[in-house]
Image (cartoon, rainbow over all chains, first blue to last red; front, side):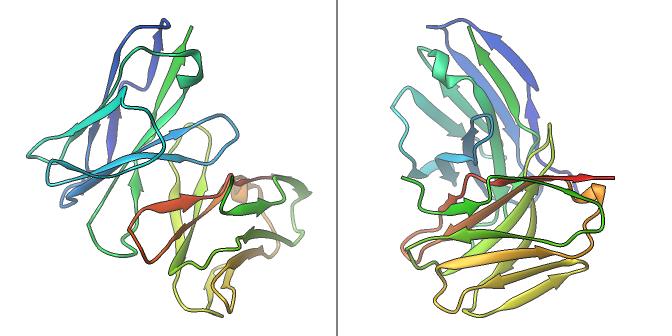
Length: 113
Length: 111
């Protein structure tokens, strides 16, 4: 089976710019979640998508937005980048079942200067 | 406010020693998961516990869910350098499917 893949692996942006991060789900998984992980911290839930609709959102401002496509791949968009947005962004796919394990990609390391 | 508190935040021990890390909360969780994350990679699921008092073993790793389902522990016997990583606990409440994450315990096993 194909695992979760994320692109790009690393990215450097300037404050105020916009960024799009991409994620391909593991085959057979219909749910995708995005997380922000600051250095030395646990993942912080951004939002989850199921059947192309947002299905839960964490404490992130509206400039964080996403999409899920019919093939269950997903994008995370961040507008008006701020220095504090520098982090590892993780995508995880799963089935929409209680206690279904999350399968993570290796993340995109975003640096905002 | 961190709903799941992990301790210690950092632990560095010699190969062969035993260790226990903790995941505590004042809230009740319907289930709790433990993940290990290595540098440059995403977290990988180790175990899911769902029943109060449940104990699960994965080779040298023993996971326990508290009776009241508010806390959990991970015990490693005879730690090896390959156990090095960030250990994360994550819990689900009944009200939704979203995971609540702890900040992790960074574990270093020195040869």
